[in-house]
Structure formats: structure tokens, C-alpha cells
Image (cartoon, rainbow, N blue to C red):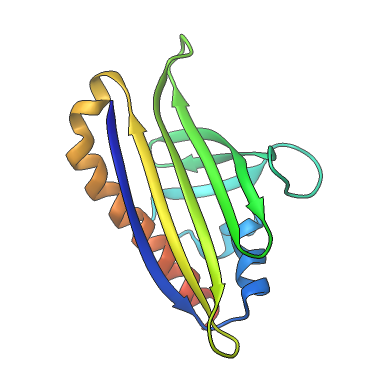
Amino acid sequence: MGDVEFEIERTVAAPIGEVFARLADIEGHNAWVLGRGSILRGTRQTSPGPVVVGTTYEDRTRMGTMPGEIAELDAPNRVVYHWWDRSSSGRTRMEGWPGYTLEAVGEGATLVRHDVRLRANGIRALGTPVLRIIAHRERTATMDALVRSFA
């Protein structure tokens, strides 16, 4: 297995509740994440109802479509997504757990700690150093887009 873990922090000029709502709104990501630096081409919620632990979604990326689910949800402080890429035989090739921990700082500002954990299995584990670079670039683009979305 090839594991990648890192954290990125940004301060967002918005109240914690608004930042959390934006991060937890799966289809809302289409309005602010897409663009330069992101491999994401679109996302959609695939289970009905409000976003709760277990809510499912699909991300369309440059590398294909990947399913996922909400793994953790503790409003307004924490949300963790879990996505995976499986082979046609059902073996998990890659999976990731991008999480966000929010903390109110000052008046109308939120510190967002974005922790990332990725796992590459089988032959893909050999590409872990490259995966780290791609993931860091992608997650940095996401955090910068989040900051800009409140500007």
C-alpha cells in the first residue's frame, strides 16, 4: 500500500456556519471548486435527502467518475468525505478521505484545516510519490477556491 497524508490550512473571511454549509453542500461544489488547478469536472449527490453521514455522491474528474460518501459530519466543525476507485472485479485501487475541521477565529472568520489521507493499492502504490504531488496540488486548488468563494 502507498499512503499519503498531509494538511493544508487557510483562513476564510466568513462565519463558521457559512463555511461549513458550503463544504457540506455536495452539488454546491460545482459553483466554486471547478476551474483552474482542479481535476474535478462536476459532482452530484446520488442519494436523496439532506446531507448526513452515509449520503452518497459521484465526482466526475479528468480520471473518470468516482463514487463516494459522507464519512463524518459534525456541524459546524467537521466534514469528511470518502471516495474510492475500484476495478471491474471490485478491488479497491485507490481511495481518499478529504476532511475539513473548522474553527471560528475572530469576528466573521474561520480557520479551515484540510486533512487529506489517500491510499493507493497494488501497482498504483508504486506511484505514491507522484500521487502526493498531484493530491497536494489539487487540494491546494480546492482550499484556494474556497477562500475566493467568500471574497
